[in-house]
Amino acid sequence: MDCKINFEQVSVTFGSAAVLRDINLQVCRNSVTGFMGPSGSGKSTLISLVNRMIDFENGVTIEGSVTIDGSNVLAPRTDVISLRKRVGTVFAVPLPLPRSIFENVAYGLRLQGITRRPLLDEMVAESLSKAFLFEEVRDRLDTSALKLSGGQQQRLCLARTLALKPEIILLDEPCSGLDPISTAKIEEALSELKQEYTIVLVSNNTKQIARATDYAAFFYMSALVEYGETFSLFTNPAMQQTEDYIQGKFG
Amino acid sequence: MRVNPRSVNAVAALCLNAQALFTVGILVVIICIIFIKGIANLNLEFILAFPQDMGRHGGIFPSIVGTFCLVLLSLLFAAPLGLGTAIYLTEYTRESRLTTLIRFGVESLAGVPSIIYGLFGFIFFVIKLKMGWSLLAGSLTMAIMILPTIIRTSEEAIKSVPVNLRRVSYSLGGTRWETTTRVVLPCAAPGILTGIMLSIGRTISETAAVIFTMGSSLRLPTTLMDSGRSLAVHFYILAREGISLEKAYATALVLVLIILAINAVAYYFMHRITSKYS
Image 1 (tube, rainbow over the protein chains, first blue to last red):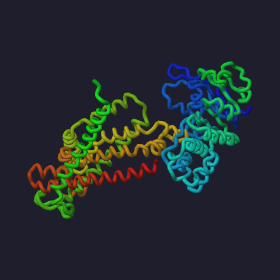
Image 2 (image 1 turned 30 degrees about the horizontal axis):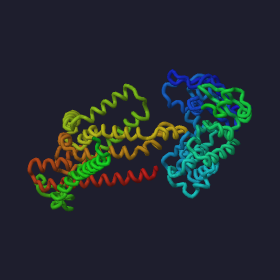
Image 3 (image 1 turned 135 degrees about the vertical axis):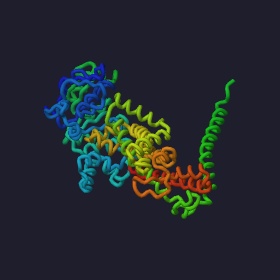
Image 4 (image 1 turned 45 degrees about the horizontal axis):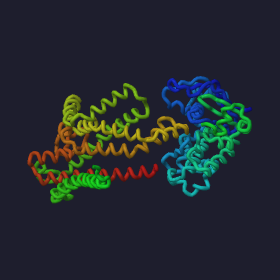
């Protein structure tokens, strides 16, 4: 398999509490990889290593390496700013900036120094289309993003990330607050987007993982229990814990 | 015996209403008194003419100019410094001994009575730095005095901006500075502006510290090194020395109107900022 992100012997502790223990996992290029597991199992922490958002936590110790295309993002001399342009993030709750729809998508582009209006117009429209939002908002791009519904806001956040043309998109339980129709739209977008991007989807929702991912990893108590192709993991799990979780016996 | 919760609620509602009305009432009474006593002497000539005979006759033009210069210069010194300190404390450093020390200093400065600032300004700026009684010495002194207000209100305003908005900016490849200037400060602008308005109010209404450092010359200040008399000082001297109570009330009315006008303009701009960002 063509490996995009490689987690090698990754352990993370907050203070004295182990959040992740010896994780070894390879995320495949141009696929959707799902991380599932009960809350507190460490899956969100794992993706916060990839975009180095973990830097904002206090008292964290990290061991092991996380490489993107072979270069270690945990290395101290990693340029975090350009890393985050390569690794897009969509958070659990929709977090539009308090600006217009247009300016939300243009925010990252402006940070890159793109200010020419025709170019911005084009890139914003393209990103919104890719996130399956453009048709709904095309005639009100100048209205506040806060006026959109939750599902629209989350697709706006996806569009904002896509505008930077990242290589990897991390989604941290992006549908936790959304209705089934909005969720379906996000999943539809993801299945299109994996042609161009490598996508990691963290979710509590096993059904979503089964529907929307190509590969799936099950985390429990800070450890990776099982990892494999989604279809075989769901039809024929190797570990009893995985089976119990998928069937809803705990978690 | 248990009192009927509905009656308790009714009494509480009545009390709270009365308290709110009382507070507004005091403001209205003060403004009305000043208005009634001052309006007779207030006309265009009073605003645009120079004072004669210690202020017994004529107008208050130099004092209006002096007041505006004092406010603008004080803000020019204090606002960048205060905002910078607040940004440093909230965005650029983690809690440490240094931040505790800075906060302690700011709190202490906020509790110092204005006459002490006046004495300090007199000894340090006026005498030691040989500025004399001047706009410069006055505004530097006032800048130090309003600095704690600006720092504390700005800090509170910046802290109230949700952490998640910062994370969004960082996740899109924003640097700390870009995140601060493009996300945090626009969201914090109304709070910061409130602090600046409070500071303007304090500068306009200050007398003790201003007399000691800017003096009380009735001439029109034309350079930074000129002495001048702010409206509040003019009012104080007119009333305290029994020169002209009518002119004093007219001066007070101008003072109140200026403060109201500044507030109106500030809130207009604040509304424009917030509507752009929400």
